[in-house]
Image (tube, rainbow, N blue to C red; front, side, top):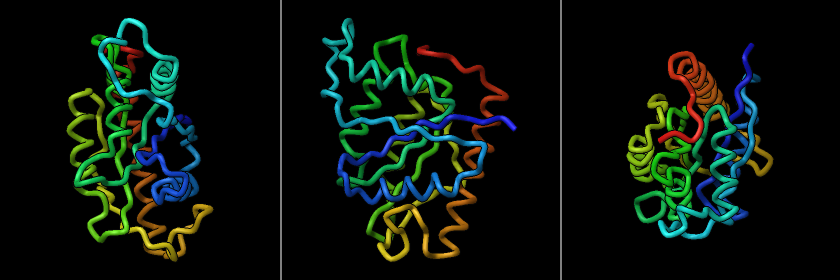
Length: 193
């Protein structure tokens, strides 16, 4: 069995983020063919093209972490009907400078949780547009707009609802299958844009 390393980005900077709790559940429910490393985005300065010739250390670390991963999983909240600014900023750093896009051919998954019944549908739509421009293949099904309920998602990543747990387990198996398909078909480029 081939094992793939998944770098995951939590789009919220909050320590108490419900999407951080969701990330714990996803890791618990993932098949053994996936291992996980969090890629932090909280220390990045705002993207500025003037720094393209001399990237700050936090941006270099971000790019290196994405390039070292076999796939990337984005776990994002929705802010004002779109993706959070911190996550968009990370994508801007990761995809620059021109010709050194760390997301090229990187298998990607998008999921998110919200207290609202619509989950993070609009944030995911915005994020998918950015990932498409960055040439990152995306798992398009199943879609996962998670209605977060505190009595279902426990802090340690336990999912206390059987049907929700099964849905997330299926999502993670589908993501593992998708990552394997992409790696079979597309050559993985490091830092190419």
